[in-house]
Image (cartoon, rainbow, N blue to C red; front, side):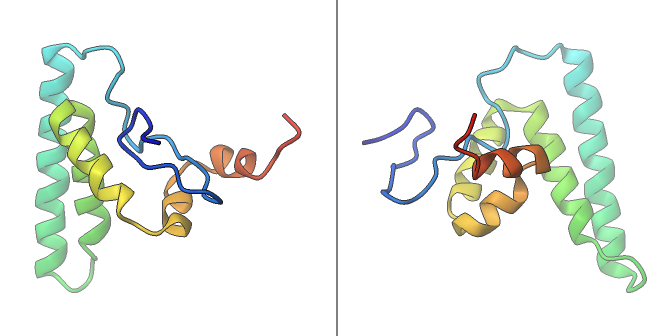
Amino acid sequence: MEAETGELSVPGRTMLPDLIRVDGPARGWWTRAGLVSAAVVFLALGVVGWLLPVVTGIPFYVLGLLTLGMASRRMARRINSWERRLPQRLRVRLRPKRFRQGLGDARE
C-alpha cells in the first residue's frame, strides 16, 4: 500500500513523516528570497570549509540544502525522496528529539 508521501509501507517499519513539509502554506516572496540567500551563504561556507581543512563543510552543505528545501517545494520533494533512500536508523536520527522520544511510545 502506498502512503501519501510516496513511501511504501513495509511491515515492521514505522512510517516516518517527510523531513521537509511540502503541503504547508505558501511562503511569501520576501521569505523565499531570504531563505534562498541564506542557502547560498551556507553553500558558500560549505565550499570554504572544503577548501580550508580547519572547518568541515558538510554541515554547511546540509544546512544549505535544508534551507533551499524550505524555500522551494520542488527542492523539498527532491530532498524528501533522497531522505527516503536512507536506512531507517539514520532517518529516525534526522528527526527532532521530541519525535524520536514519541516514536517508541505506544502509551499516547
